[in-house]
Image (cartoon, rainbow, N blue to C red; front, side, top):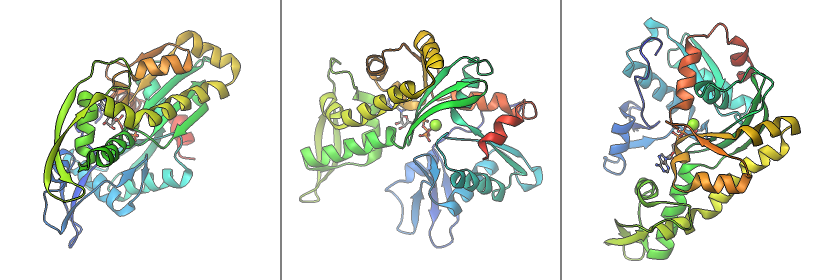
Length: 317
Ligand SMILES: Nc1ncnc2c1ncn2[C@@H]1O[C@H](COP(=O)(O)OP(=O)(O)OP(=O)(O)O)[C@@H](O)[C@H]1O
Ligand SMILES: [Mg+2]
């Protein structure tokens, strides 16, 4: 919020009463309810792979977020939303509309690689190629920015959530154990690594046998996580290399010299930066607080909404 900084930082999940469609919980509180609620309470993620998958629920979630931040229709907030560069015009329109229906007086869009570049203070207005790699939960995007616009883009609809699902699937296949993607995410963060020379760790997980349905536990190791996720990680690295290969050669030279900047939560996966450096042959810089770069850039833009109007218009195409 303008003047107040970051006031809400939670997963995009809501818990909804299926009978009344009322939102019962938002964010972390809703995540805690996963698998623990009565039949008529379901948890919904209205966004998936960087796009709205359930318009009505997205609107309800945005309304709940605005409400939590102390805003209402009466305060008529202007809302700045970031979209992946790969979002289609239909997806962009849906997001804008959902925010307007949820109570925003005006909703403006900004492409997330641009927001990240602004958050990182990169020279985006100059004729220099700056490369942002945003590895999120549902998407992996590499964008080259020059003169205030995206000049080359490679976007994949895979991200950290897909790594979680791959771990869940692998544990089910190899260990006859059903665990949730949330448990897999914890495993990934705690003992996961994509560095083949990483010191191995192990963690015990509880779940239910696929074959009998009875409660059971198994030990999962770093190697198991590596095996389950390696193809997806290779695909992410290949996406970055492809963007560099397809960029205008003069600008690609800048990136080879300056290095590329990696943001997003998945950037923290152990060993990923080294895999990227090997796979692209360029230096990789990880932002200090890689999850916050996009929102920091967005906050900066909130203060300059009028000067940066051209960015927002191009994002709303
Ligand atoms: N230390 C960590 N190691 C590995 N993965 C992590 C770590 N911390 C967070 N993540 C992963 O980062 C992802 C969330 O990143 P981020 O907040 O950038 O995504 P997002 O912006 O919500 O998604 P998207 O940009 O794809 O729409 C999750 O998949 C999460 O599991
Ligand atoms: Mg993101």
